[in-house]
Image (cartoon, rainbow, N blue to C red; front, side, top):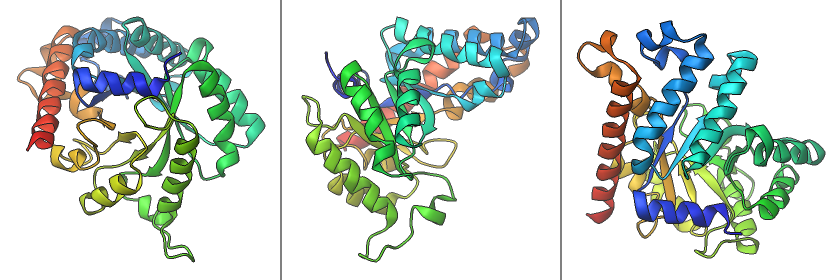
Amino acid sequence: MTPAVDLLYEAVAEKGHVCIGLDTAADYVPSRERRRAANDAEAVLAFNKALIDTSAEAAACFKVQIACYEEMGVAGLRAYSETLKYIRSKGCLVIADIKRGDIADTAQRYAKAHYSGDFEADFVTLNPYMGMDSIEPWLKEAKSRGKGAFVIMRTSNPGMKDFEYLDLANGKRLYHTVGEKISDLAGEHKGENGYGLFGIVVGCTQREEASFIRKTCGNLFFLVPGYGAQGGAAGDAALLLKDGNGGVVNASRSIITSWQKEENPDNADNAFAASCAYKAAVKMRDEILSEINN
């Protein structure tokens, strides 16, 4: 069984570094499509499918933020499940952005829920701040199922400095220690391309720290948020990559709402929105590759 991290490495080599975030709020769907759907959850699902069909060749993977679906209740979770299944049916990899983090017994149950069944994904996002015993059950399940995870290390939101930047007695910041712990884990459990089965989340909005993080976490695959709507640029993201690979760069709103910036958005349908998303993904991919090659 090929580990998910190796499959993602291969997808990046083939398609580039773009991870399209299907963090799809109902008001991201063209109004005409939303009106004719049975409910918002059905509108979101149809929108997602159109984007997946059109943009799969330009994306190494997709990321699906569960909160956007939970807010729509049971129908939303059904749309979430169907979105995950549709992505995987197209031969694409999917990251479930669930940010779980809980004690061992609960973690094991979460792992089974999100590595199999109705909510099966190839990767999940994890919050490590309850300790490594909240991570280890996920690793056990991941190894047996060929799955992976991205553990939050240093994010891209303004509040990251409230906790992630706390100075420890050893002179390091808290997020440095998270990176070290996951790097140690990667040394024990890694794929054929040298990256750990579990990677880390590293935002691209703090350019001055990028080279240090990439150097100290060389055996970790990165999920890089912060591109686009949060202010990160291709050059910022490229500093977090390694040898032309080593990570995927996520963009959500800047891709999936790109149709709203076109003329006459009130006349848009899902096909038009999907074509705009594809163009935005290709532009992002090419900009990152250009920065890598410079």
